[in-house]
Image 1 (cartoon, helix red, strand yellow):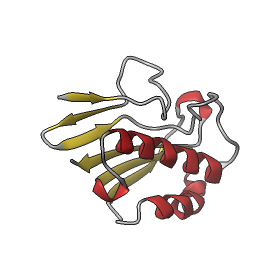
Image 2 (cartoon, one colour):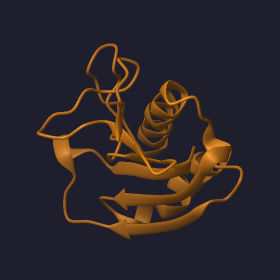
Image 3 (tube, helix red, strand yellow):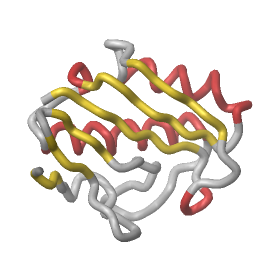
Image 4 (tube, one colour):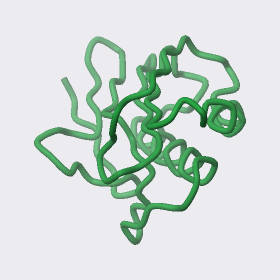
Length: 122
Protein backbone atom coordinates (compact mmCIF):
# COMPACT_ATOMS: atom_id res chain seq x y z
CA UNK A 1 0.00 0.00 0.00
CA UNK A 2 1.07 3.56 -0.66
CA UNK A 3 -0.25 6.51 1.32
CA UNK A 4 -1.31 9.60 -0.65
CA UNK A 5 -1.18 12.95 1.11
CA UNK A 6 -1.32 16.54 -0.13
CA UNK A 7 -1.48 19.95 1.51
CA UNK A 8 -3.89 20.97 -1.29
CA UNK A 9 -6.70 19.10 0.48
CA UNK A 10 -7.65 19.32 4.16
CA UNK A 11 -5.55 17.27 6.54
CA UNK A 12 -7.15 14.48 8.50
CA UNK A 13 -9.12 15.62 11.55
CA UNK A 14 -8.91 12.17 13.10
CA UNK A 15 -6.91 8.95 13.02
CA UNK A 16 -7.06 8.35 9.26
CA UNK A 17 -5.23 9.20 6.02
CA UNK A 18 -6.39 11.23 3.02
CA UNK A 19 -5.98 8.24 0.69
CA UNK A 20 -4.20 4.99 -0.08
CA UNK A 21 -3.33 3.16 -3.27
CA UNK A 22 -3.69 -0.61 -3.05
CA UNK A 23 -3.90 -3.15 -5.89
CA UNK A 24 -3.98 -0.41 -8.55
CA UNK A 25 -6.92 1.34 -6.90
CA UNK A 26 -7.02 4.66 -5.05
CA UNK A 27 -9.30 4.83 -2.02
CA UNK A 28 -9.93 8.27 -0.53
CA UNK A 29 -11.32 9.23 2.81
CA UNK A 30 -14.45 11.35 2.66
CA UNK A 31 -13.67 14.91 1.63
CA UNK A 32 -15.63 17.60 3.38
CA UNK A 33 -15.74 21.20 2.12
CA UNK A 34 -12.92 22.64 4.19
CA UNK A 35 -10.67 25.04 2.30
CA UNK A 36 -7.15 23.69 2.91
CA UNK A 37 -5.56 27.15 2.69
CA UNK A 38 -7.56 28.80 5.48
CA UNK A 39 -9.61 26.04 7.16
CA UNK A 40 -12.88 27.78 6.36
CA UNK A 41 -16.10 26.15 5.16
CA UNK A 42 -18.05 28.04 2.48
CA UNK A 43 -21.75 28.81 2.89
CA UNK A 44 -24.45 26.82 1.08
CA UNK A 45 -24.65 23.46 -0.62
CA UNK A 46 -23.38 24.62 -4.04
CA UNK A 47 -20.22 26.20 -2.62
CA UNK A 48 -19.66 23.27 -0.27
CA UNK A 49 -20.04 20.74 -3.08
CA UNK A 50 -17.58 22.75 -5.17
CA UNK A 51 -15.00 22.73 -2.36
CA UNK A 52 -15.47 19.01 -1.67
CA UNK A 53 -14.92 18.28 -5.38
CA UNK A 54 -11.80 20.47 -5.42
CA UNK A 55 -10.47 18.55 -2.41
CA UNK A 56 -11.11 15.23 -4.15
CA UNK A 57 -9.40 16.62 -7.25
CA UNK A 58 -6.30 17.61 -5.26
CA UNK A 59 -5.94 14.07 -3.91
CA UNK A 60 -6.47 12.57 -7.36
CA UNK A 61 -3.83 14.91 -8.78
CA UNK A 62 -1.34 14.00 -6.02
CA UNK A 63 -1.83 10.35 -7.05
CA UNK A 64 -1.25 11.23 -10.71
CA UNK A 65 -4.91 10.72 -11.58
CA UNK A 66 -7.93 12.75 -12.63
CA UNK A 67 -11.69 12.61 -12.29
CA UNK A 68 -11.90 10.33 -15.36
CA UNK A 69 -10.13 7.62 -13.31
CA UNK A 70 -12.92 7.55 -10.70
CA UNK A 71 -15.00 4.38 -10.86
CA UNK A 72 -17.16 4.81 -7.74
CA UNK A 73 -18.20 7.63 -5.43
CA UNK A 74 -20.02 7.63 -2.16
CA UNK A 75 -21.72 10.91 -1.34
CA UNK A 76 -23.20 11.97 1.96
CA UNK A 77 -25.71 14.81 2.33
CA UNK A 78 -26.93 16.34 5.55
CA UNK A 79 -30.27 17.05 3.86
CA UNK A 80 -31.68 15.19 0.86
CA UNK A 81 -33.47 18.42 -0.11
CA UNK A 82 -30.00 19.51 -1.34
CA UNK A 83 -29.81 16.60 -3.81
CA UNK A 84 -30.55 18.59 -6.99
CA UNK A 85 -28.18 21.44 -6.12
CA UNK A 86 -25.47 18.94 -5.15
CA UNK A 87 -25.91 17.06 -8.45
CA UNK A 88 -25.62 20.27 -10.48
CA UNK A 89 -22.10 20.94 -9.16
CA UNK A 90 -21.07 17.26 -8.91
CA UNK A 91 -21.90 16.70 -12.61
CA UNK A 92 -19.35 19.35 -13.68
CA UNK A 93 -16.52 17.36 -12.07
CA UNK A 94 -17.56 13.72 -12.47
CA UNK A 95 -18.25 13.92 -16.22
CA UNK A 96 -17.48 10.23 -16.78
CA UNK A 97 -20.49 9.41 -14.57
CA UNK A 98 -18.89 6.86 -12.22
CA UNK A 99 -21.03 4.48 -10.20
CA UNK A 100 -22.38 6.28 -7.14
CA UNK A 101 -24.20 5.94 -3.86
CA UNK A 102 -25.71 9.07 -2.34
CA UNK A 103 -27.31 9.01 1.08
CA UNK A 104 -28.61 11.48 3.61
CA UNK A 105 -27.04 11.24 7.03
CA UNK A 106 -28.00 12.77 10.33
CA UNK A 107 -24.85 14.82 10.73
CA UNK A 108 -21.43 15.34 9.12
CA UNK A 109 -18.13 16.48 10.65
CA UNK A 110 -17.89 20.22 11.39
CA UNK A 111 -21.60 20.58 10.57
CA UNK A 112 -20.95 20.57 6.80
CA UNK A 113 -23.66 19.82 4.25
CA UNK A 114 -21.86 17.24 2.10
CA UNK A 115 -18.95 14.79 1.94
CA UNK A 116 -17.54 12.85 -1.03
CA UNK A 117 -15.28 9.79 -1.10
CA UNK A 118 -14.01 8.08 -4.22
CA UNK A 119 -12.42 4.92 -5.56
CA UNK A 120 -10.33 5.40 -8.67
CA UNK A 121 -8.38 3.14 -11.01
CA UNK A 122 -4.63 3.77 -11.07
